[in-house]
Image (cartoon, rainbow, N blue to C red; front, side):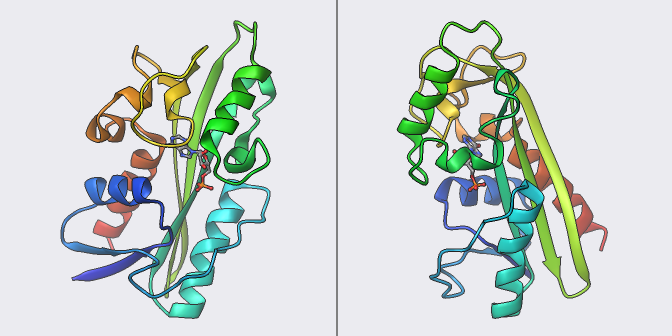
Length: 192
Ligand code: IMP
């Protein structure tokens, strides 16, 4: 069975990946390989950050690995918070504060178009490959739903009325940026 490490400990991301990737692939996370350090993501692009995380694990643990970097791009904010989505309000990973800051920045604005983007970097002995996924949508005027993570309560994908946080994991997975990038990686791996 092929082993592949997903360089994350984000339970939501791991769950999404295990739903999208085939069962004949043994998906490991950072805990599984004994990697306890915080992986640096100091590049200024999704691609750069994804590569930093995946390359670190590949070099230090000698295992095939992929990492994703993702974020929310809001048109009215010229693409912010983008690569800084996790620490938009200052503190890394404080979703409530990040969403409050976003609501404040868009207050009174009718122009609320946005998209989630993911870039996956896959690092194997034979080289590096990138896979991208995105989902268009808009930002609500207030939070709705309590599932998912990050900005999910504020994001309604195109053609839907519910936010990602109001959907079941499998519904979100049928259209999410990460699921789309994972599906591309899956197709690539199945052709190897
Ligand atoms: P990273 O890819 O772990 O660096 O995540 C960047 C940030 O983007 C997260 O902390 C979230 O704030 C946001 N984000 C990425 N993917 C999602 C998603 O599927 N739903 C909601 N927020 C997300």
